[in-house]
Length: 242
Image 1: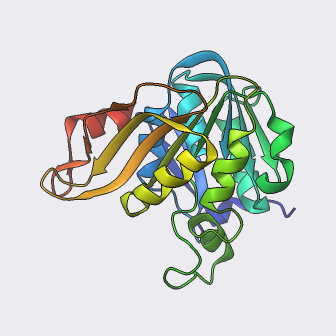
Image 2: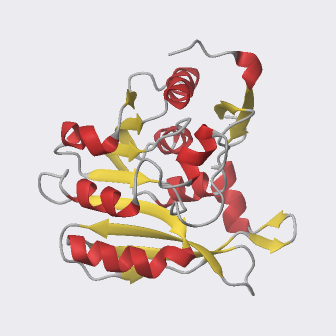
Image 3: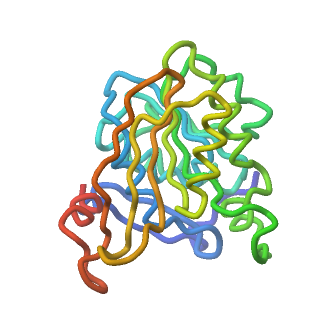
């Protein structure tokens, strides 16, 4: 694993500069999906969680800052990104609470047996949809070249010892596919929320909590990101400022 060169990263801030995130200048750059998924996660201050595809660790950093979990294992297959995640854990004072794990979820998912809370901002796109990015970091983060949605659902389902939940953010175009696959695997819908850029637009993303036990599903009010171009809604501003 090569040493991380600080000249190749940017320093970005969340929660009124209380959380610092390093990410590559030329590589996968996180989007609004990270803070909205962190906000969607439950408060389990004594619980342990697994993030599949942690990238630079941003969602885990935000979740730990808000004390949503006591400890998070951040699993990432890409070496350069796991270096960033480790550094972000140290810079934010979460070295003991955040464990960066370098590995392939398909191969080592059994190592996390017993963890009840699993979350992921998985690759959005199937490999047969559109042009693949020539940048490997971007390609593997955005496209299902290393982990498919079906693999994520099937293997995450086997991890909790008893009751467990999987929390996802995905493009709304994959909503029906996700719900059908989740039902086939054995998941139940616990909570779901549609995400709109503007109130009068169409849903672009959705957040969902899937459980391995039967529950009464709750459909939350939609999350609207902008009240007008360039101006966040009050709720989105709260999510971004913590």
